[in-house]
Image (cartoon, rainbow, N blue to C red; front, side, top):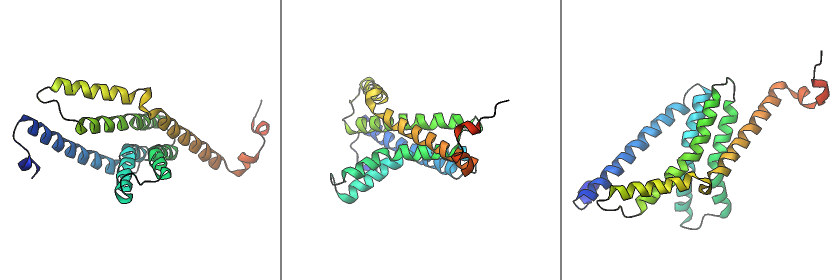
Amino acid sequence: MLAGGLAGGTTSGIYFAGLLAGVIAAIVASLVALLLISAKSRALTALGVGLVAVPLGSWLGEWAGNLAGAGNVSPAGLTLLRWLPAVLVGVALAWCGLRPARRTFVWLLNLGLLWVVPALFISVNYVLGTRLPERDPQELALMIRQILTATLGPAGGAGPTVLLALAISLAGLGVRELVRRGPAAATRPLDSRRHFP
């Protein structure tokens, strides 16, 4: 239906192929996330949560914007949406834990996704929101590379999000350890916990 409404030419073909590839990639990513989240393994489930954290925040933002009207989402709502992916990833990693040691890979991957996926979203939105340089794929590739470099760098804004997720996950691990040891271990003085030969 979309292809029939586009003007003929190479640019329209590229546009249609790009949209089709994006839809297929979203469907595949959704299926992978569904399989990961429904897995019995805590590590795989946490990985699935990390995969959907950023898109979920984006979708909820679009939903809130459409429901409230353009520009009518409260500042508190915008703040919650900004930090939601970090909270989801932090809670999932705290729930996952670090034992066995191979779960460290899940932590690194989830924190990496929290850093890279927003940059990819920004880059794709920027490129799709501008007129594609007609018959100049080199200019398009240069534009994508510049936007990705800017959004992945220190000015891209992912640092605080990743740090919040890490802080939440480490705090959650601390709470889990205190609960595991029991209430007596939490109230006992520090010196009495040490056992010297």
